[in-house]
Image (tube, rainbow, N blue to C red; front, side):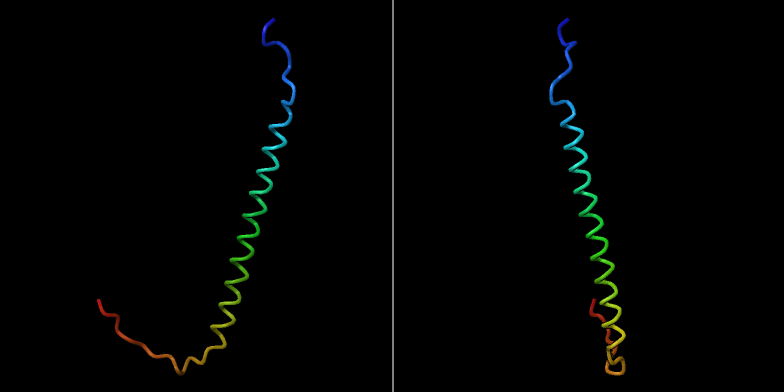
Length: 61
């Protein structure tokens, strides 16, 4: 019958899809790790600031 033969290379798409999903997962994990690292660095820098030299000002609207 027409169309009853299994397609060749049919397993290629799931492999490619898994590769793409894996790559996306790696990028997401890297981005989250970088955000956490930069946030910690920012907190450390804020702790080192001489807060006695800070002053408040009025925002002009």
